[in-house]
Image (tube, rainbow, N blue to C red; front, side, top):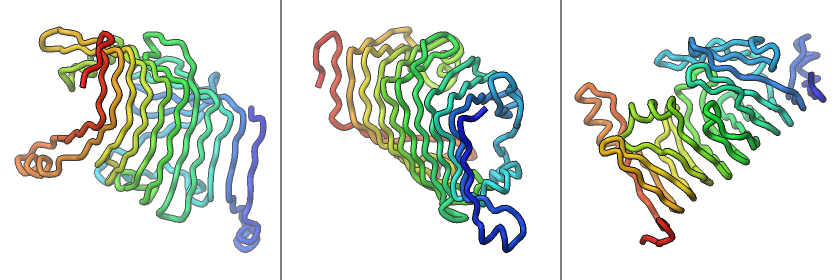
Length: 273
């Protein structure tokens, strides 16, 4: 059920081609669900009927997808406002994760230039199945490329997460352990990120982070580090020289160069330079 549905038509094209040409659609005030299934597909529906629409992200080299509806390409914009979204991830054991006051807007400026904006609140109680909660999230992205070829997108994005509370669990602990020697056990954070991507891969990341009551663990020696507060600007750049040499040797490895600016750390109320 929707509180309201707004649809705008291109009257001239509708008359000229004897079929409805929709300019934009807005769906307001409804409850929806998004499920990440064991077979890596996604299901969209309602809390009671979770399997109304199914789709899979492309996994071929070109990122081509024939599942994007053609009407979406013809719209000037498509938006969802004042919505509650319940997310379930069967693979990562995330159950009934809620996004409240969800606003999403997708805009086609032309066939090759697009933008998307998203804002939502969470305010959920932390639990083993909801290890990461936050107060507010805002996301904006501008990108170029065909919607049918997701892996060829290039563009930039901005992400702001306010009052993020993170608490590790066994599933996340195992995932991190497989890729890193350092584990983030818990933190309260506010994070701002500006990023650039090419071929759907992030090439540069600039951020401003403030962490409080943070705890890290070293898998090698089992030691833990507790930090009262940490703030810093940072910049991550793709190490293209490393990528080139790795590909020549037949290995698809990623390497990043990180720069920290204005780093301030407080540990046990002692400010470290």
